[in-house]
Image (tube, rainbow, N blue to C red; front, side, top):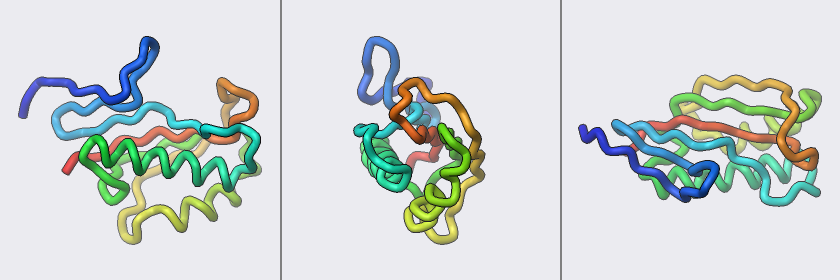
Length: 118
């Protein structure tokens, strides 16, 4: 294994992902549009995760851990409806879901994942 760290979509403040020793670490992914309900925001974030994981050489079947932050924990049932249709059968990762004040008041969800590369 190489000691090289690869970063994707590097900005001044953060990168969307880093890859090291076969592990992909995603930054907290947030909705691109805040005016949507929790279901739409969850679909948006999960689609972004799919895209960045693919760029990093991974996918949702290789998730090692997921952290979900909800602005309002009462949204968990609606969020889980979307999650349950997205998560790969037989590959549900360890997951934590907590209520948290998010950086933008329009955001209802933020998701952070760690995955194995292929």
